[in-house]
Amino acid sequence: MPVYEFRCQDCRRPVRLAFTFAEYGKVQPVCPHCQSTNLKRRIGRVAVAKSEDARLDAMMDDSALSGLDEEDPKAIGQFMRKMSREMGEDMGDEFNEVVDRLESGESPDSIEAAMPDLGNAGGADDFM
Image (tube, rainbow, N blue to C red):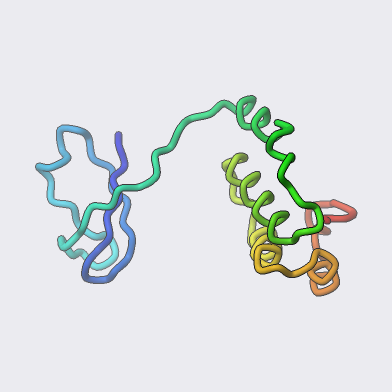
């Protein structure tokens, strides 16, 4: 069943609703947050199904690493965010904080000093 994305014009929250093709256009969408029917359709990203092997192949491709400047925190952060999207999984708040800080230009050494327990929950000895 397709999922359609809307934005409630009253509470301004995003709304995702599932309708069959037969229902869409005939059933009035309702905001589950405020019960408003004042919804505006949004066109979301198209999801392309990839096998786990295809995602891993894309990550291991040398061309993905060719433009990476290991001395540029922004480039490292962007690369890490891209890899997390390829994995298709939420990497957690700690990962997102590190990537946000890298993308803002903060050095990995500074991040590691500010977050002494970085990566210890997952059992890794050294996150960066």
